[in-house]
Picture 1: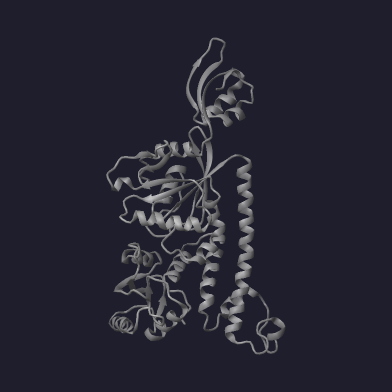
Picture 2 (picture 1 turned 90 degrees about the horizontal axis):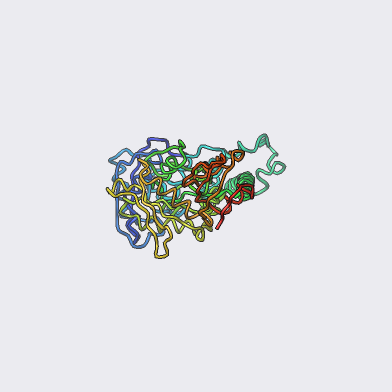
Length: 434
């Protein structure tokens, strides 16, 4: 079995089997995944097949067709748009004498190239080890570099735990992978504990958390940068964002909140990745509101929405309130707008993250969805209460104000009642709270 990672720029033959009812199983998406992995597609063979062949997924005739293509074209590997079983993968590699990757292996390769933080790299390695554990057929001794000086000289096997009597190389490899998985899980548990501690701190301070979610390449990071004046990496590639980013978000009336940008979802997102990134994805499941970002210009947006909801359910976020954000309206030549349901609740906001159109509407909609009871009231702020007056302006709660003869200022406010109580603490003269 070929174990080395494919080099950037490697040429790949793509194999697309149209067996899904879903239109998302497209050659276009497969090519985008391949390019996002730093690979070069040089050809694509497609076929209709209702049921996969148990040994090779595609059957002997198609294997011969692939072999003939490889004989004429210089390719480094063969990539399938569907998942392959370990047996199918091994049989294909033996028949074609080329590295073969299924859909999960391809997505893992993208994640391995994109992870930047220590946490992200650990999460990707965990998913890779989980995927590889069922595909071990020969030595994985390179993993032993993590073990330090445990000694492998003569007679050291039993005492060092690296191979007792009768232990095969495969058994030793499987145990090494298992040990590495346990160590990574231990490290990620510490990260998860720290994230939970940070979330509890935000809860105690009454800071609301909003999380972005959506199909990969829907424009989440571009929208994140628009809303928070941030500089998160933006690329026209699948899975450009892996590591979560949190920034302060200033909302009218509500005040400051926290916005989280997370990894994009995709059809058949590998379970190993969902499990490995669970600590990161909890930023979504624990949020007060999910901004479900949709590529409004995509002809497959309905299916993409459904696929995102499948993943949200898998991570326990199906009950978290959602606000649909239809992005890229500039490609539709439509104007930004807010849609409401029969009860007057905001359900959709149409925006363009590339030029910021609809940003103000979106901020208002977010504030409306996460805000508590809003009141309109008049207060008189004395000269010595200048800090209180400044706080009202910081919240964007001031509708109008006028000076009074005694030097105070009468302010007309639209503000959350809880915020009003917290700021004033009954210290202002002339309060008029409904």
